[in-house]
Structure formats: structure tokens, C-alpha cells
Length: 379
Image (cartoon, rainbow, N blue to C red; front, side):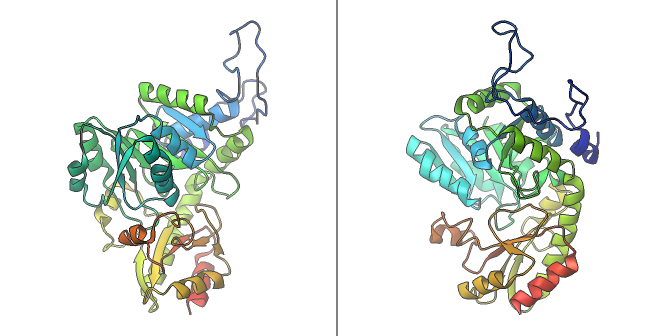
């Protein structure tokens, strides 16, 4: 199947009971057994649930993987990956990443004896300087949140394979519509399915996809043992969202381009971060590993004035000032005080998350209305 067909049919079967086209919501905790251990593949819904299983198969299909796992949130999915590690292990991570990921790494897992190296990965040659016999995992976001930095997944995968390290890629911003990290050599793909995969700002969920069975078995064990699963209603909602992923992403990309080009031309705007610009760092890598450039755009105002940035986001009418991203509606955020507030000011400013930075999740409305809204808010 090609991708657009996979969003609707990938990994899916009609329900065995009545031929239901959409997977039913199996709102049950447990399943009848004829005798101990003699059942129809399901015993207890923390371990397996037919609705969640259908979603996990869809996740695997979209990312060209063999095994999918669904979690109660994106951070629960990341937490599951870190539980593959032991005290004394080391992780190399991009230094420009979602604040919640940074918080989980530094405030939870550092206390368990895991060491993290946060480095810029725009130039992958830096990575080998931080590898030791204790290194077990490389964590990559691309495009990064919120600076839209591009990391060469294939080049990082060559390094990870050279040293027998796991490579995990947070593919939330790109989605499998634009980028498929497993095909580029990653071992684990992670999504906050809350965002583009769900697509309607009505469900919180995380996803992992892998190809290797041994790795999958370890993650399934952690998923069941730790219990950070999603419920069947949430699984149903994301399954429904995935069926329109391709058409939504096409419009997100079209509108993202229009908004980025408008901002670049505005005299009150200093910098615009969007991977589609030829002068964007690693633009050529973005062209090679992504099929388009997405609907996420960040920008700063002239003079880097905090109050000016706050005034802009408060004056927006169609863009909603809110956390999160990837929904059909356009959202605006102020990373320094919202998504990245958990990162110390000096650390976030090293990566470009300055006080005037505004991050836009460009939705699927008419682009003329979005540009008019930005113009009135900025002017």
C-alpha cells in the first residue's frame, strides 16, 4: 500500500464479530475464558485490548514498522524507552527538545543514575565525542521543538550502528506522512499521538514503533508491567484521526508555507524558523529525508522584546493561545513561558528559545484568514 491508503487500511481488519468497518470500542477490563489460559487472545485490558491492538497495528503500518505500542501520553511512551536503561547508562540527546522530555530526563531519570549529554546535533560529527562504553541510547527530535532544527537521521543511525547503540527518533512534528525514521536507520520511533496523529485536540496519547522483535518484546513487557496504556475510547479517537492524516497534513504544509513566507516578509519580524527556507540550517537534509516541510513555524520579533511577544499572542483572534499542536485549528504558543518553562532560562536561550520566540501550529483553515489574523496582531 502507498501511504494515503495505509492511513485508512494499514494493519486493519474488519471486526470478526459482525464485520464492523470501524474497530468497535471494546470498553471492557476482562475477557471470558473457557478454561484457565484458554481464551481468544485477550485476558485483561492492561495487557491487550482489541481497540488498542487495532491502533497499534495502524501505528506500525504508518511507520513501516513491525510492532506498534500505544500509551497514555507521549511522555509515557518516552518513559517506557528509558526503562530499557540501567543506572550508570548514558544517553546522548539533542539539546533543543520538548521541555517535557528534558524534564523527564533531568528531574526523574538523572536521580536514578542515568547520565544525559545534551548537544547540538545539527553537525552529527559532534556525537562521537560523547560516546563511551556506558552510552546506550541516542535521542533525536527532528524537526526540533521549537527551533525546527533538522538532524540527519541517516547519518546519526550510521554512528549508532557503529557503536551498537539504540537510536530513538521523536517524529511528532514531521509525522510519518513527511518522514519515516525506521527507513532511515532508527530503531525506535516515538510520537505524541496527541498531536497530528489524533489531529483534533481531543485525546492525549503516545506511540512507539519498532521493527526488531526482541526490542518489541522488551517494550511490550514494560508497557504491561508499568501500565501506562491508553483506554479504548482514546484508541478509537486516534484511529479515526489517522484516517484523515494525509489530507490534513497536505493542508498543514500548504498553510505552513504561506504563513512562514508572510512572516519572513514582515518588517517587525526578526527571524523565522521553518525548514522549507533555503537558508534554514540543514535545509538540504530536510529536503532529502522529508517529503515536505510541515505546519510548524517559529519566529521572533525585532529587538527580542518579551512584552511585544506577549501582546501579539494575546491579540490573535483565529490562532488560539494554547499548549499543544497538530490539531485542525491553528494554535500559538510562547515557549519561554509555556512548553519550555521547565528548561532553565540560560539553557533554553543557548538553543534559541529567547523571550520573544513565538511558536505557531498552523492549522487547516483558509490561509488568507490566518495571514490576516497574524497581520492584525503584529501591527
